[in-house]
Image (cartoon, rainbow, N blue to C red):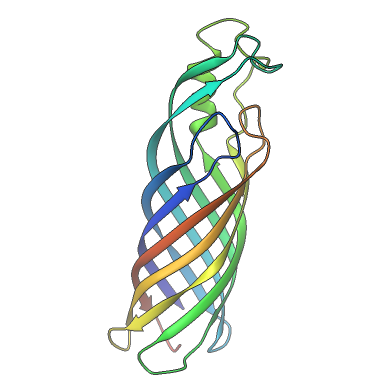
Length: 189
């Protein structure tokens, strides 16, 4: 078994044309049960700070008069899946992972409150949009052992796909994620 504690950076790329991408800083960890020396099943949990983005939505069916405002929101990911680790040399341990799960963001609920609620009829919806979506990450990284029980996670680089579907966002988002930290080994590799 292994437990990682880490810093995480995510570059979020919304699919809507009326808002820009932004960067999140955060952290979390991964718990991995090793099935064999090389294959493990992981649970990866990451949380990212609140970030403010500007929405400028032109008039359309969902926003008859258009909408504009600054909206804050955070991002959380809950991912599960296989990790394959290699031991080509005693001091270098590369690995690859493919994780699936969910993402949650408060930005869509906050956008509804900021852009739709102040003016009656500003939006074609009357309730808070769903802030939950599908998430998937694929990538890999490199661990360097400090001693028999602790590895330094030099870097993990992932493609992070999220799919939030609501009035503000109706397509997938192609994002980038970087993770670095410490990996604590409990038991044999």
